[in-house]
View 1 (cartoon, rainbow, N blue to C red):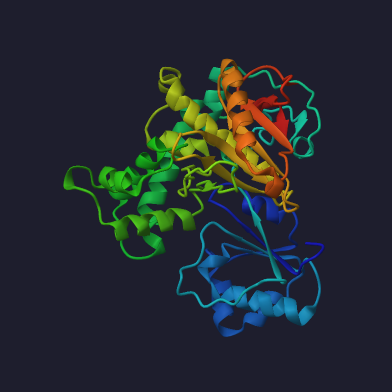
View 2: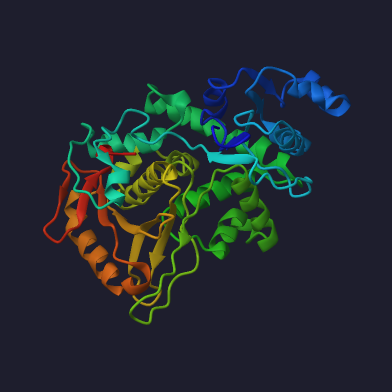
Amino acid sequence: MSVIGAMLVDGPKAVGKTATASRIARTVVRMDTDRAARAALDAYPEQLFASPGPILFDEWQETPELWNLVRRAVDDRSDKGLFLLTGSARPRDDARMHSGAGRIGLLRMRPMSLFESGHSTGDVSFAALMKGEDPSGRPADLSVPDIIERMVIGGWPALLGQSEREARSWISDYLRTVAEIDVPGLGPRRNPGNVMRLLAALGRATGTPAKRTTLAAEVGARHGPIAAETLSNYLDALDRLMLIEPLSAWRPHMRSRSRLRASGVQHFVDPSIGISALGIGSQELLTDLEAAGLHFESLVTRDLRTYSQSLNATLSSWRDSQTGAEVDAIVELPDGSWAAFEIKMGEAAADAAASSLLAFANKVDTSRHGEPSALVVVTAGRFVYRRPDGVVVVPITALGP
């Protein structure tokens, strides 16, 4: 806010956007519930901009015309930190909005990382890892069952201190609201039952390249696959609600001739969404550690996104379509430096994960991409260390910004 006139804070519902922005704002205008404010927007919009600033316009997407008015107000006043906008859905495509480039900055807010919720010590700095520094520190005292419970509960501020049973009830209601109100409210009528089946199908596909043909068949169930266009509309709605965040495919220059996957890897913005959609909890995950490992990958991906955000980094994944070799996350910084992360819930898998990272790094054309800043295995384990081969092993409960 010190360098730009307005800030848009977006993200899914219930991640704390309004509560956080309200700490900074001097005036809060709730566009979804304040009828007087909406009437003023139609009749005399200048009134909305006369209050002490910074002014927060909460759920601004309910009145998309507000975007252009904020943009114009920033131009007219030529000052910084004037306005905040918060929203939990992107406007429809037919909303006529001009670019806010140079006037309205963007900050994505997600459910809390383990460091934010108090379940990671944060002793190992993600930023320091990206500089190639040696890690040191201790993880939080969480066992694998404890971490699985955190996956089920998720990073929702409303669930801090709540039990798994209470959290499962809350998230189930959250998804029901998404299916019955939020998704249908974004456009043409959509079947809530289909939305719930899609959420479950995406939950089963967590950590994998979700095939659209498979998703269409699972949503249609006994009635047969839904139409490709219908599936695209459902996925678009979940994207507008910022509930899904697939990892795009990284396609670097390689030393060998490889056919690289172009499709992304499915992840929800929080692992609890997919787990809840499947109707399971920590007990079921403890009896199926392979599935638990995929949801653990989603948990770590959420935290990596959060820690990398202040560095303006991008996240992607890599897979060789010929050999099946893959790397769970590639983090790239604006200066071109990069690091590769393998995510394994079990400590015993660190050796195989390290070998996989080294083999991958050896295939990348470093004359074009440079040497990796770090090769990291993130686990649910107990120890932080750098291996003799240079690969770093870090428990997720020790990682922080």
